[in-house]
Length: 172
Image 1 (spheres, rainbow, N blue to C red):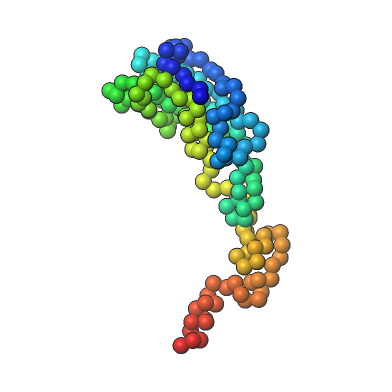
Image 2 (image 1 turned 30 degrees about the vertical axis):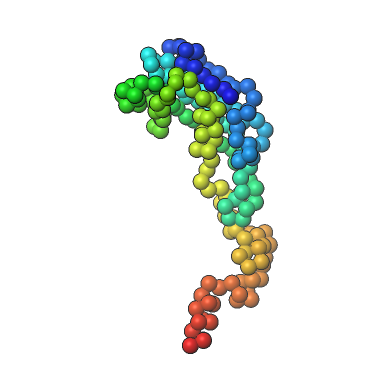
């Protein structure tokens, strides 16, 4: 696990990249090639500012038809770590350039970088992925892809949502 003790962080900002990608949650997110990350850390008294950019190509299913899509993810992140609870509140306002900077109060002055990066992978994934803006999904009856194949389900009248109501009306 990659750990960054406060004692190794100085006032002068320093950039670094983890070697290898053991931190990437590959059991849960399929990724093409190696994920890239560059982080910068600097210290202000009892606080450490950690920022970075994470880039990776995820393979995600299209929300409409399920086809796998390669999706390029690029996420910037910024954290303030502190071990002092009084510092946590004040520091958030001062130091952050990112809007959604996260302030984390640690028990020990050591940052678990693996955990931070894993968290960022999940935060960076899009809520919705489409293989194509105009993807029409699959036919709920025969499973054909509606933009590629012409399925005749709708013509047969089987797949009209209000047919059920007609049936009900007949039975009375």
